[in-house]
Structure formats: C-alpha cells, structure tokens
Image (tube, rainbow, N blue to C red):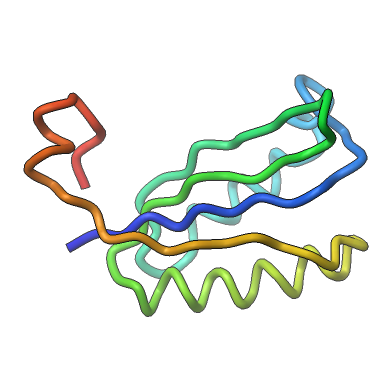
Length: 101
C-alpha cells in the first residue's frame, strides 16, 4: 500500500519560475529516494509558504525521507516543518481519478 507525505513550511522564496530554476537539481535528486513514487510541489508566494505532497511505497520510507528532508531544510534556515503521513484509500482514489500508486 502506498502512503502520502504532506509537508509545508514558511519560506521567503523563491517562487514560480525562479523556484523551478533554482530547485531543478533538488527535484531530480528526489527521484532517487527509496520508495519514492511522485511529488506535487506546492507554493503560496503571498503567504510565503511552500512544500509538497509526496507518494511513497511505505510509511517507513516516507518517514526516512521526512527526517532527511527536515535536516536539509534546517540547513537552509527553515526550522519549523509541518508534516503528516497518510495511508491512501486506493479504491476511492481510483473513483476520483487520483494517480495510481
């Protein structure tokens, strides 16, 4: 069964196309994480928040990634990270055309 990791945090920027340019290498590195399926990048420039919705194969792999990512964000000066891990209800997700995981 797959799980969703939801992460958000305060961030001064960059956002939009500047964020895409500056974080491209980071995005590529996430593809190499154990058990990773996909990520939706989230941003709210007006409220200075960013984060993402990630799909992993197991809670264990999601937790390992979260631990590593929180340390990385701390090294960027982001001390507080909000995160939750959820199980996916595949049957209902399929009905509503959610991504297959």
